[in-house]
Length: 159
Image 1: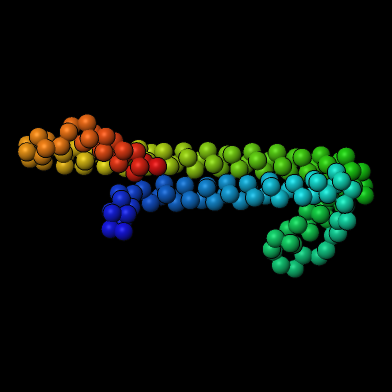
Image 2: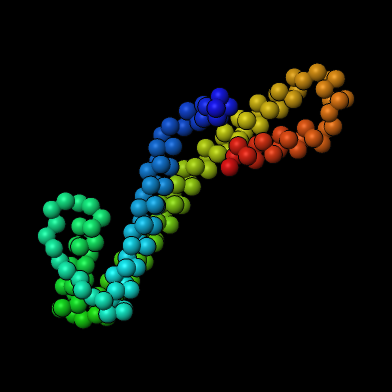
């Protein structure tokens, strides 16, 4: 556990970028769930189970959001027909998938410099540690093992 906290200590100076990363990855997850949730009214509309009801919304939760969407679709079906409501569902799915991918890209945009800097710092610390080892260590250990272990450790840290 000490090693984990030591690795976490390398990213302390990137608090603002980590906050942006956390925000964007959370928004990506929300829009991913929303795009999957829009498949239910889509399938209900296609297969004729359009027992959609518009209920008054008192509190914001998953079922009230579902009721708002179903009410919106029911009004569109009553006014314009099923094909118009189907178009709205497709538009909602496309927009939510676009926003999910946009926020996922932005989260990776803020994460990449942090990963690179932490990897660079760790590589530099490992290099300095290897240079500080006594000569006798290198006669007992094979050089390929040292390089393999260090590169594997750095790759593990990066991911």
